[in-house]
Image (cartoon, rainbow, N blue to C red; front, side):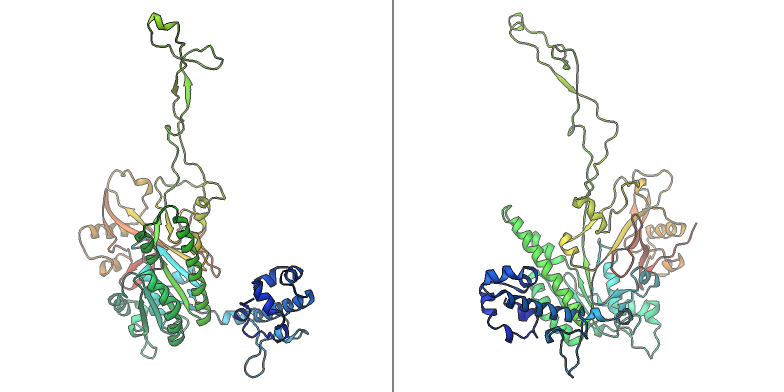
Length: 509
């Protein structure tokens, strides 16, 4: 029971000094005491049953007192109360009322009303929030906005600095300076309000997985306790894991062991970040990469052959074709063998629907891509993505925000071959994409503003059939404090412009 004082540092062991040596000798932990029968523990450790039951009762009473599940006026032992300085009794958070919890609810704004409304008020403190999406979807732009808004006073921020941990590229200070001077809200702050500054953004660089583990476990807790940042950003959480996996040359026999070790490392990382977020009352936001996901393919006729008979056969139900004439000397000795030919393939072959218990079916509920019900028509080539680090990491985070980027094709005349996956665009988007194709300034200048905010930035390019413009949506896949998007819904459309990110309000026609 070596973990008793680690779980309950204030637990008094004076009354149980004769039990602890035997419990430690037989490797009985607190979990064993709380989950196993007292008679089984007493038989295993050769201890009196009544003494074991008393110990278990005191441990359970103190745990309930810390959580606030006990009653302040009930006659329990002193172990169920936590004494603090001044002689008063402090109970756990579950004893707080709903109003107390609402008053303690702190969020960091995205500086856009529509995006904040979709997030349930913003990015909350005390939780791990993941922002995932493919390259160019706007992850870093949203993170940079949060680094500045965290320094604002409530209700936009917490008037505290921010900490940025980079695993790929250093902090883009030039882009932060541009946000400070061009964002409508940040550039118009009154002189009496403290303005965000690059000096209040702390940075750490983790070039590989070994240095990342050392910084997160040793340097990060010290930095959080010393500077008390309101926001901790890790950009990105999967970069070093993916680089480490690609650089290793493992044999098939050790590959499962490597995956199991990585899963254990991700669980420990999630526990560490959750503990730091709760202990220091800061919001932990991590950026995650995605990989392509391919839908199940329909079976081809060669994979599922159908046979039909060609001619009659003496065997009932079998038919064979006329054999090739043989020499008279062999015709009597060789019997004709039945031959078969493939039957025509079915008219249509659709991809099989995966079972409800398989990962291929269930991942559409937590990845952010491909969540349209099977009853709805699916595009011929859906652009499906899967966040990195798999299901193990998905269980460590409290909220997943998917930034979806899709191309809008502008056609002149006949529709191209990929018109089934094309996204309808408005007239001002058509003009913006056409201007981008001609080489005019885009997205970061007056053209975007004149066109009502149509995003035609660096993602715009000339595609087959006409210019192509990128459209982006923010989808809250899940969050315990807000309502996620429904099946088949795109979410809140937004754009990346010189002032950061903002929701896109479309004009009809």
